[in-house]
Length: 275
Image 1 (cartoon, rainbow, N blue to C red):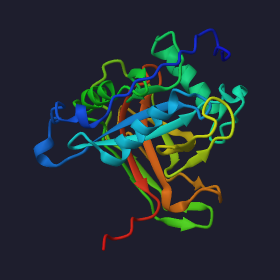
Image 2: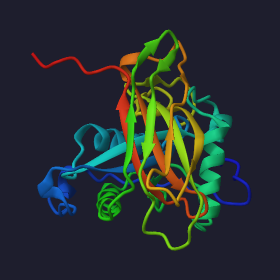
Image 3: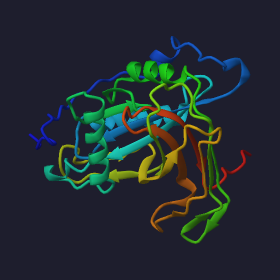
């Protein structure tokens, strides 16, 4: 009932799996005894106009808040596509940028499909976004190889600008193809919700996982160096975004395979101490 995207069909599916029933069977990744955490980027292409999407949004939010796999840090990126906006509800978080990114995944992963909700783990595994068991297995598998070291540090906030941002990427190893790898920087915001007034989710109060507010390529990693990338990018913020809910996310992604080699995240405001 919705228009197709660039010669690929849109498929709408739903499942009702829960994390609690799946987590116990997931083995710990290598290095668990050392206490190190491996970052895994989980992207969800979704829309407030899609009736199958709220369970996937809830799953991603649960992965983000509960961090169910030991010694693994799930970095959640919720990206709202814009092709559902013709169905009676305009998603305020939607952007053609996220639609284009999803289409690029469809082409590069040779999946032949673009659909919502679609979850993609570390740029490689992709599946229907509300399948909790498949999500956990894919995250566990992605956490097994040693990732490329990535670090991000935030200095402070000056008005609408984040100052003192420093990013470092270690040596890119493990690929004999010497494929170009780009360094990406995102701003995400958690705690967002909408009272939907029209469309397939009319009457629902939808709550979201960390929503991507901005995403841009800030450079290319150099495979010939032990320090593949270092930079001090400027980051501008929208005054409508809630500062305490914002995070910066940096990840290294091979341009051709879409494989995410390493990632890191940092909050812009330190959490309040527990009383």
